Length: 332
Ligand code: NAD
Image 1 (tube, protein in one colour):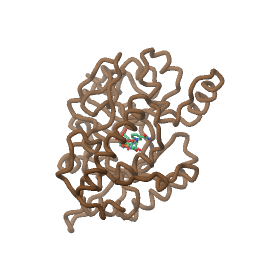
Image 2: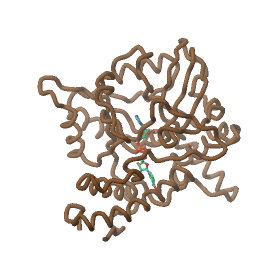
Image 3: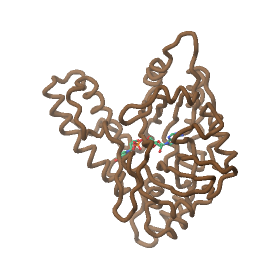
Image 4: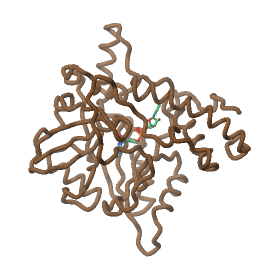
């Protein structure tokens, strides 16, 4: 049966099965950096829960994985409170669903809202706080509101400036990732030493950043692409694309592939381009992020408890070798 065909009682029973399963998978992924299933399996089960909760909103529970940014804080790290939360992101898996996102954004027929298309880097989110141009704190996303203080570890990453080119007080956010060749070498080394290998570059990056000894992080060859600011007021830009240029001029590394899309055809073209180029990139990507380009409009659109309304991730279909989701049966 599809979610649509379930009675409310059946939907409630299924939701009560899916939530603890997703929470357990989330725990393995976010806390232990050792996923038990492939991402697309998690995504498919998560999408079922979203569908149930969309049909029966009174079945939503406060502890549902759909209502919380996944992630926890490891003991041993000082906690950091994110005054402006670090959120997750909604995702879609087809051009039709992406068109649905566009229809929710384009509410004014007389004025088309432009997007900025970016690569969805397969790493983990970090936040860097600068006071008068000096790096004072770096943290993980954690549960979105409370993250881990990993300042010393982030200071070992060459792409992160310790001093900006201007004395700004600003909080910059982005992705920390492990390049494909570093990942390959790290796993070869671990295998030779009889240590467990990392499942993918994302988990390797997360495991490498959340180390109590900064020398381990320094040895792991991590890199970053910054793509956001907690609050855009200190930044001299009013669009997402100009903000990326501004971040570059401040000394950050940003991903150079971003492109402004005036129409959905431009968006689909970008997706097609990078679906083809994906394997040739020196870092992993798991999709394309489409963002409303105007920063004031981003702010006006705001967010749900979990996801900004002004951006969406288009996720690539799973690669052939991966498990086929329909093999996993969810019955009531
Ligand atoms: P997400 O990783 O899908 O999307 C949000 C994140 O995208 C942001 O926090 C940011 O870190 C990142 N990002 C990368 N490039 C970006 C860019 N250009 N602009 C903005 N953000 C960018 O969401 P999530 O809440 O972190 O986690 C859900 C994901 O984790 C799903 O993809 C799911 O498959 C995976 N997951 C897998 C398992 C598993 O067991 N395999 C368990 C839990 C979660």
